Length: 87
Ligand SMILES: Cc1cc2nc3c(=O)[nH]c(=O)nc-3n(C[C@H](O)[C@H](O)[C@H](O)COP(=O)(O)OP(=O)(O)OC[C@H]3O[C@@H](n4cnc5c(N)ncnc54)[C@H](O)[C@@H]3O)c2cc1C
Image (cartoon, rainbow, N blue to C red):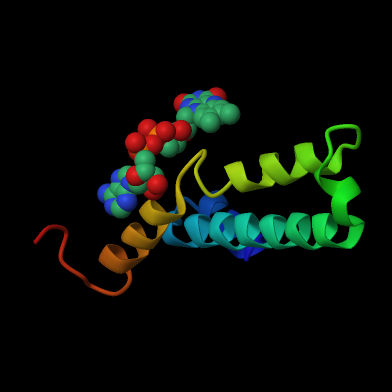
């Protein structure tokens, strides 16, 4: 997905949806990895003495910044699925 989006970008072609979908998939993968990591480490994963708690918080951020999941879905809905911009 990333290479496809990068190729489009390098060719000067529109790549907004492709780049957004890469970011969506990446943020979901990071969050699931962090969730699994915390679960694996049990209570110690939640304590601040280890870095797992910090990574858990950090990976959740990727669903908000630099662009939120809601806005990505909105972009894809409008530009790929032909949904109306406003109601
Ligand atoms: C740690 C951190 C570092 C950052 N670094 C930078 C940086 O270096 N440079 C920079 O420019 N910015 C930076 N930001 C800002 C970041 O880009 C914004 O936080 C992000 O784009 C979300 O915007 P917002 O915070 O204004 O939330 P809002 O836009 O106010 O969103 C709040 C909630 O409403 C939802 N929402 C908003 N609009 C819609 C819509 N149309 N439809 C459905 N749901 C919607 C969002 O998904 C979210 O859940 C950073 C933010 C953080 C937390």
